[in-house]
Image (tube, protein in one colour):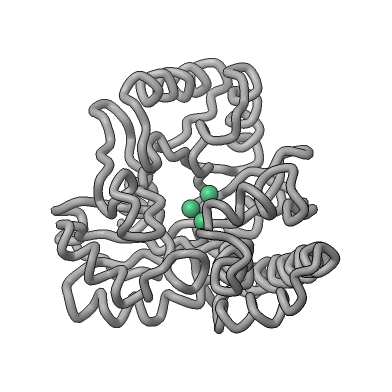
Amino acid sequence: MHTLNDAAYSGRIDLHCHSTASDGILSPAQLVSRAKSQGVTLLALTDHDTVAGLAEARLTGRDLGVGILPGIEFSTRWGKHPVHVVGLNIDTGAPALQRAIELRGRLRRQRAEEIAGRLEKRGFAGALEGARALAGDSVLGRPHFARWLVQAGHVEDSAQAFKRYLGAGKAGDVKVDWPPLEDTVATIRAAGGQAVLAHPLKYGLTRTRLRGLLSAFAACGGRAVELLCGRQNPVQTRDLQRLVASLAEEDGAPLYASLGSDFHQPEQPWRELGSVHLPAGVEPVWKLWQTSRQ
Ligand code: MN
Ligand code: MN
Ligand code: MN
């Protein structure tokens, strides 16, 4: 179990960010230092499909007085639609969690090999070895292929790599059959954590479909939704807040409110650590574990 004291809730709270353990560019230690300098007192590290950065984050958090909440951002799917679910306050040693992480590791390795094969067919020999070398211990993904394409002189920068070869509809856009939403929520619950639907406004769903997703998520044990994630305009936030409230009334399925920057790198100031704040009148997700503690 976590051992957060009240001081962890006294400053800014950020429950979604990434380190070099997945596709962030700061090490867990650097990330926690930066969070400290931004006034963050409670940080959940939520790397994609891994908890490998947590031990280092905890050590730095202890030194600097930043509360570290163990988290993860799982790739999953609602029907055929890819969605992300954040697990907060998880027991990182739970067997169910470890199995879910291993499965996604396999799926990501298969995808990386498929991407490399497609790039090599286009004449980019050595893509797999090159991207692997850049990834080091982190999970190999498209950002590493992008960096390799830049390094090998095939493109000017990562943006061009995505535009030409890796982005939607391009050769490197390999779909993965992620485990379904219900399984993912069950995994997080089995690890003693709270399942949070990540960035609900980023899936390109109509209001009706989004309502369906929220409803399905709550029905299978999801407990919270990111009311704010990264850059979001206040009108969108208010609409989402209303949608969640109406769902609670009609379905009797209250979802608590979470928030996070989705920080990946310092060069993206619109998702700086600690930069988002919950609006008044919502029940914050941390109520769930604060009350269960008593
Ligand atoms: Mn990412
Ligand atoms: Mn995400
Ligand atoms: Mn994220």
